[in-house]
Image (cartoon, helix red, strand yellow):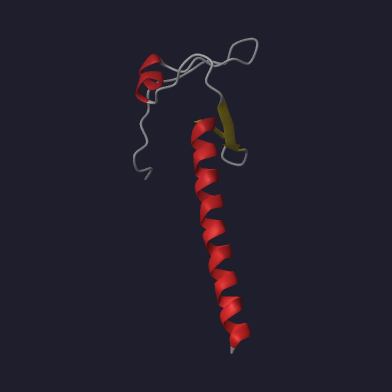
Length: 84
C-alpha cells in the first residue's frame, strides 16, 4: 500500500505542541539536533509528516535545473523556426 514506508513507533504531542521523533527514526534518517524540518500534511486524511528542509531544497533545485533545460530547448526550437 505504501512502498518503502517504515513505522518507528508513536509520538505524543506535548503541552507546547512539541513531538519527539523516535531515536531509531532520527538515526535512520540522519536527523540531528538543529536540523530544519518542513511540516507537511493532508487535513482530509488527518496526516502529518516531516521532511528535512535540505531534501526539499535539493528537489526544488532539481526542478529548477530541469526547467532551465526545457527553457534552453524551447529557445533552440524558436530559433530553428525563425530560420525557416
